[in-house]
Image (tube, rainbow, N blue to C red):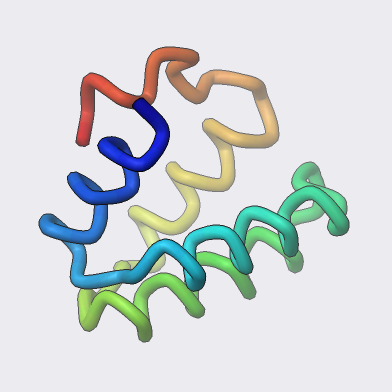
Length: 78
């Protein structure tokens, strides 16, 4: 099941499993309620995926994470 999720993510984003795991570890080790940490990760993801994230969208993402509004069943979005 987990590898299947990574395969779907990689197919949609061209981001490999090792990069995803590295980013996940960065989140675990960092303070995911800290806006600066989240901005750094968002920018890193933006660079890796080649997708630009507007300031407005970045603010919405940060707000969702800081306020625990991230969907628990993230797999259905991939």
